[in-house]
Length: 409
Image (cartoon, rainbow, N blue to C red; front, side, top):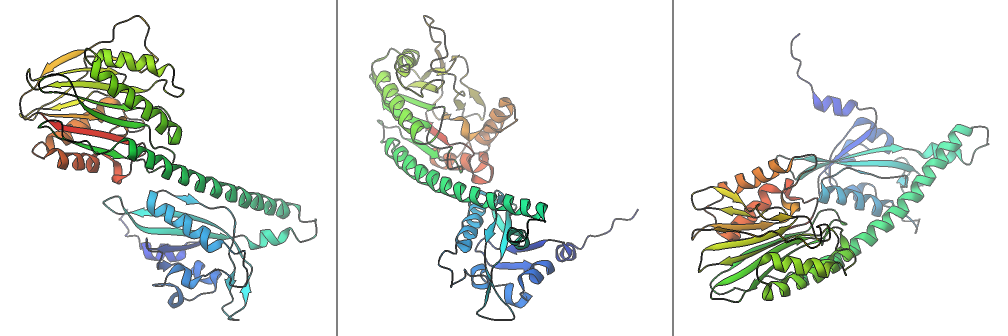
């Protein structure tokens, strides 16, 4: 059987439902025949024009909110790159035959992204189903029971969407407050002696999945020693940001007086027992000593730091890993390990949001990190930090927040 080229433009025009294509700026790029027929518009009246110039809200209805709701949905798709299904919307349409006269219409829209090669949204698929007749069925005689039931379901769906919209607004506000708190608690680090680190905090795209990760850098006693830590609190939002701030401060203080990273994490574990929400937090603490050219480290269930050597090899600091805070047996010594480094090596600490993927073995995630480090091994710490975020976060969007610290040794 010979291959037959598919005319996708013809397929689009022949689709049985109402479908339009919009640019990310909400300008019509195309609309199929059914969309034009049901909306009562010609192609010239639609294509190339701004969505809400073609279909504004009914100016005679002060309660009209269809335009606002549709704009919010489409902009969510642009930002997130994810499909957004809207519930029932009343969105009146001006009569094409009688300008100035508005027809009461009800629609059930679905908006979906079309992604380009770089993962960014290049077009929006706007599919709508008119349900005006279902709504009007409620006003008819009760004999048409099925239609009335369908209308009731659509009405309940609209009420649920109103609730969901209020929840979205509340979550968006919480995200803004949590990110402001996170920013205040994770400032850019000041130079520690002759050493300067590159740090990044990448909040999740999801409004809820933010503010559980932290990093910390502190000068330690001795000629030329610093401590670097990263951690990840289970949970998200304002509560996680508050727990994160407490644990970060406690570990920073403990590292100043403890005899090594393991003892500092032991002290943090004791403190975490008194902090609601601190259970199962992961953290890794390192001590870099430039006099002895060694890195001493201990991990509480955290992903292993990576050491990028000058010869292009990558080693993971995974010889001193214990369960997360609150999950290890009492009266046992937390492990601690030491390895040497060569001047010019690069130490990388990070949280799971940078590398982990759903349904993927962690070894594959670590291998992806190692490959990215080798590719960019000649970069400065600042450039390397940007390159890792670009390479490891799919389409530049994080499903979980991520913290990253990079220092050249």
